[in-house]
Length: 236
Image (cartoon, rainbow, N blue to C red; front, side, top):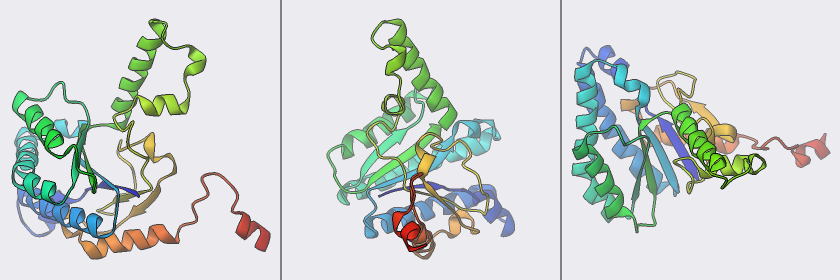
């Protein structure tokens, strides 16, 4: 099973408590640790978290620096423990424009855990679904121009194979906290048949009980993937 999470509401959590936004982001990292533990306990195969979007660069410079600093701290502090828990870390998103030290940190996290076969923790960093699709189209266009592909070769499966998530199954469930009900440029192609669960809590309050609530809602859904539910149809 693949669960995606849009971790939203750190700033609102902090504002409601009269705390600086940075404290909300710090508490958000603690909630991420809880989410990873819960995913392992629930036998989730893939957990993809939206940690930093391409649009987040437009936030105040200090907040961007704080967010990147928290990501670095999470990797440096938690990576060894994740490795011990047999977690494989994957990073998706655009890396070419990132600072050299950050790129190395991301590369090292992937290299260390590459052989692990437990939970795959996919961190969407400097990620945007539209940007990912645009890069995939550029790759395909270049292959067509080079004569390696014909127009008729372009299928949904081919497009999927050119995405950052080419070797990762599409999400079954996407959870968003804070009560907002939109995808915000997260896994747009991959989420075509994902079940969406919107929780009214802010991300720092996300815990095992919240994860269970989302999973129970998911299990109650009738997933038909565009097909007719023959059991219900026959019963009617």
